[in-house]
Length: 249
Length: 348
Image 1 (tube, helix red, strand yellow):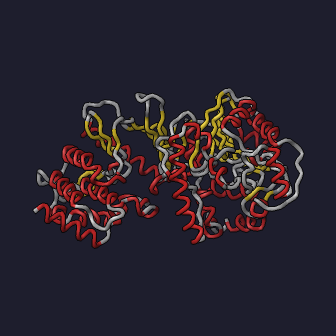
Image 2: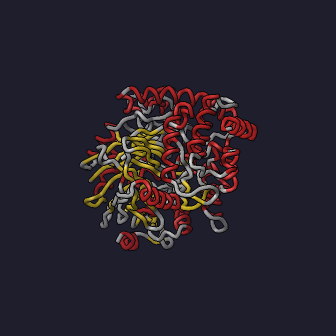
């Protein structure tokens, strides 16, 4: 048993790895706080939804409850072996992962435009695993079945990865903007993004977060840096959206 | 079963608090502060009281980060547990949420009154408390499945009341009657005898060879440089010279701790490295595991520093040393023995 994360980024969940050999490895998540248990229930619901879309032939659940008594909850999640990206390396170094994740999003996610679609809530490069079976999204602690306009999680992924690369710079590099444009074009190849999201994608994402802060429970109050997209300045938002829309035209 | 035994053998103070008559005092707060804190509980909840009077202790008592190590016990939910030296219940309450029954034992009556109030607020009716000296603990007829000894073993050799603020690193002449290791061993043997056949021990303690001790950090119990890893005799001289008393709050290396627990009768001991410490662990890795994923932030101590200048200094210097040591720990295999804290799971 190994402790991987302990309530990181304001969460109240303990994450462990159990099992010695690669085949026997499992991820264990546990919590004894109401907020943590709410997130574990969301994790369970998220995996249930994703499993039906991503692994429809699979009979056994990827995520299951192994202990629950009203004051404590523990779930077990199948360990997916593969390459896990590192968001802090920025968009240029993660371009391939981001673009393949956006294709995966488009394939898996139902809906279009402003109608409420399923919500991952933390679609970061750190929560994407790629292997010979393709792309897999993990960490469904903020899942809601109908909560965000279609494309929100995909756009969030693009701009969070962009933010990590821009931490020490005010403005994005040309190459980064090209990846942002490629990502939005890929996401919108079937015209499923709302016009607002195409026109000013970063602002749309930021405003959605601001107006729906409750979707992340108390986590954003405890750890405001949890969603880095939140940390772009007004000026940066304006300029990035302008550069993006210029490039798309 | 345990409750019946408590009712039979000890004086009942309230619904869940039992008195052995052999009380003592060990607390971060002095007696007046502790009395005032407990007196305030009629008007305030435990969280409100700590937030108002001792905000620096809030996370120490209530943070959910503190309970991560309990997962190593792989509890099923039907266990009877004992938390030895439970204080304000940082682990007693999380254990009660996970298990069938928990007995918290501590020598400080006010700490138990606070913990009793906390358990009532959470409507946990599976918590009993016993005020008793851990060194003179009697054996129980009903056996426990889990014994928790969290930051307690090192304090077993100490004697007399301890108000930490006026004791930690302060001069106070004192003589001790017995060998520290022998006292710790006797304590663990009694505990072993109180465990069921499937019983497990959860023991968390600082590492004697914590890498920070070699670069100028002070021993966490005596507040002196180098005493944790120096030979005990030299540590004694230093402690007598600086504090007027010998060095008795013995902590151990991985091998030293394993030997001690085995000597107490446990058949198997699993050892874990703990970063940045066992109280607020960010990473817990089996001793035979790999440190390749260790990040500098896992070495950052969870200490609230309110002084601005010290905070800036801590951030800059701390950032540099954490990067350096994370790299050293990741690359050199034998450095795992320099992990800051140890968690040992002993199997009966």
